[in-house]
Length: 73
Image (cartoon, rainbow, N blue to C red; front, side, top):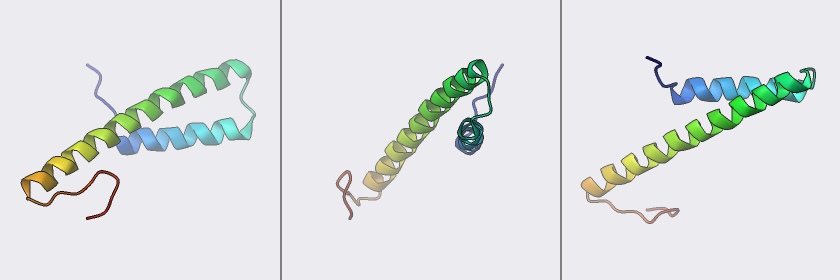
């Protein structure tokens, strides 16, 4: 069974991919594979950030302190 990557591990790998692609030395096929992996990692990171934001909102609501989305307290 495959375990899901942590946010930190996914972000670290994404940074590696960006560096490899920015170097411009990868053959086209390898660059496409790296790009595809990067897109998947981006979606994973965005999902984890969204989940974390929802959890924080729930914690704030339970605490009785409400905040407007996108605004400060």
